[in-house]
Length: 154
Image (cartoon, rainbow, N blue to C red):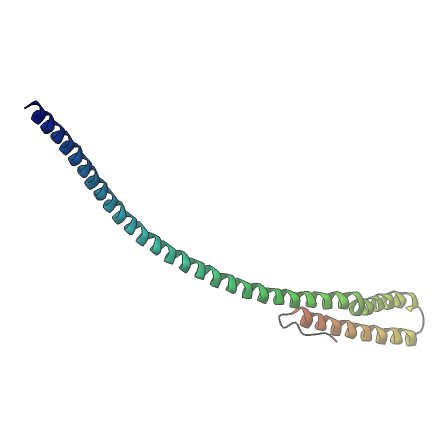
């Protein structure tokens, strides 16, 4: 009987260990299944996030292309404006200063010879008018060169 009791006790203990092991495996399987479901959900969320990021990247690339075009257009505008400024500087330094200095000199000369003959005074007046017309012409060219059309000065 003692062997039989010992055998039953051993079998009960082994059965208890086996049930505990099977219960642990069942719990582990349930946990793994829950984690698999959670990973599937997160995988779907990541796919949506990747699609969203790809769309944003495409929009950024389109914006960059548009910005490159705008930069190129504005660079061209600035080059045109720069050319207009160069033309203006040339006119101011050469074409505008010449008639201005002649008019100024003729006015000073007129003051000196005002006591002389009227023939010299008429000659100075004609030169003065010619220089003033040239100055007016150059001023008009400046307005056209620096104006919105940016026409070339000759």
